[in-house]
Image (cartoon, rainbow over the protein chains, first blue to last red):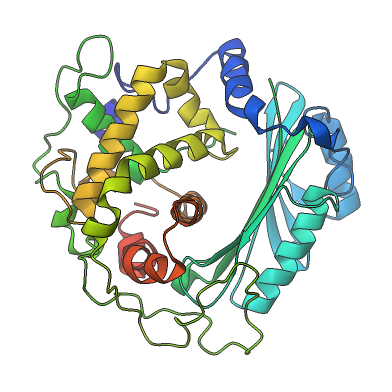
Length: 178
Length: 213
């Protein structure tokens, strides 16, 4: 029943869209997230350009960063932002990079904040945050959030206390538009 | 690599959509059957009964250094150390009316999130009515789950909904972090997020019923 439900008629979640439809929806969802006054973002994470970079660009970038990536450059792992084992996920439209997401975990709140700061600098390009709120503490689901907006990209970093699972620091840089 | 929507949300919501007539043919089999009560509250580990003590005594920071957190936004630091926070708020009376708005915020934020966008895109492509039906179903699920209503949601139980779906920890954690942000945006105080909403979401026993099943 569960397998039938996913993608069944009347249940669009998990269904596939053709690339053109996907691009249209993506433009609809992300277009409003731009800050036209902020100008273009430029490269993030020391060389990636969501919306522009190719898989070959990503491969070169991962070599420079010392990361281990899968053959299609969808996922990489290695040391980033002071985290020994960061996970990098990359999404593409064809050969064009759309988004890059980075996540890391730690059991120490101070380390979580350091990683979040470094991640924010790497993804937000040292810009002033468009939004900065929350505070990371000992309480489960306490969260510090920073969001950066440009006219072509949105970046966000969240450090969240997940209780027994420690702290998750998750950030992404998302190209805007189609 | 296709990123997937957290399926603990996906399957019961799909079932709810089918029962509410989402789709071209009104849904056929309502999808809400399956031998379960259909209410998340039937799962004791998923039912944050208001007024009960938090089930979470899993504070990983209890032994951490004192330099733990900034307080740039007035974060509530009263929930410190290893003691479990107690929800002293009447969750339904205080937040029940906000469930629809929170549900909408969760859906819209997930739809725009790189991890979940691929799966929500077909829903968005289906149009505003489909999105609203989805939001309404989520609101029913949340309302029942927190004991504010009963039987409003008629999808599968949490256990039934998750078995065989292979939800990753990465997906689950990212979605929980998203929810935390939505609650904060909705004005829920940090103390209530921790004491009233966090416990089932971060409880290892509950997480184990969803992740990797």
